[in-house]
Structures are given as structure tokens and as C-alpha cells.
Amino acid sequence: MGLGGVLMTLALSTGSAMAAGDSPTRTQMRVFMRQKLSYSQGILEGMALEKFDLIAKNSLLMRNMSQTNSWLRLKNPDFVAQTASFQGNLDALYLAGTDKNLDAATEAYVKVARNCVECHRLVRVDQHVRAVQAEEDKKKK
Image 1 (spheres, helix red, strand yellow):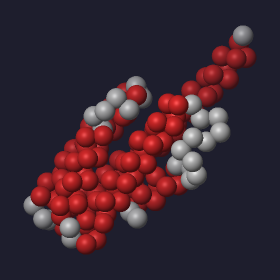
Image 2 (cartoon, rainbow, N blue to C red):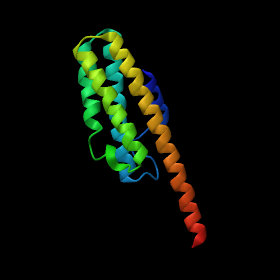
Image 3 (tube, rainbow, N blue to C red):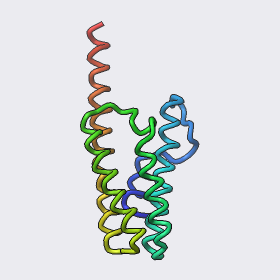
Image 4 (cartoon, one colour):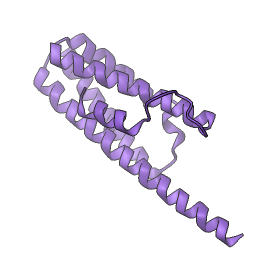
């Protein structure tokens, strides 16, 4: 499992898709992110076995995910910049797969994994800020 896969595994709870107290939206997002993890694992498998078709296929599938409504649900402006960088790195990964260039694929995969780490950090900070704001709003009432 690659760095992105390890981080996603740590970030997502194990067990059932619908944990106690989860909203349907949160459950959908968890399923969505697990699919992204699956594509990341497919990319790493393709790199490890030099199956360039797996690299190209899974990077394209992950790229397509980044254009869906589930992906764009967060409306943080920094998230938009992260998404553009992520998509560009997935494009480079796809091209490396179709060119059968393992070195370029490895470089692009590291950049994609870095995008995942940075974006998840951004989301956690955003969630924390929202939680603090919600607490402050409760105190005002």
C-alpha cells in the first residue's frame, strides 16, 4: 500500500460504512474516499508490477472522481487550488502510464500522495474551524 493508501486507511475508520451517528452524507463521502483509496492501490500495484495499463486506468478513474459533485461538496477556496494541483498530477501520472515511464509515474504518484495529505490536512483544519464556530454560536444563543 502506498503512502496515500496508508494515510487514507488511517483517516477512515474501519468497520461498517455507516458508523453510529454518521449522516447519510458522511457515509456517502466515506464510501467515495474508499473508492479513491482503491484506485490509489491500483496505481501502486501497476507501478510495482510494471503494469502500465493499471497505472493509466486507475489514475484516469481517480481524475474523473475529482470532477464529481461529491468531490466539490467542500466550498473552501484553498480546496479548489488543491484540486487543480491534484488533477494536474493525476494527468502526469496517466501520461507516464501510457508512455510506460516508471520513473515519471513514481514521481507523479508521490506528488498525488502529497496532494492527498495536504488536502486532508486542509479539510481537518476546516472542520476544526467550523466546530469552534458552532460552539461559539451556541454560546451566543
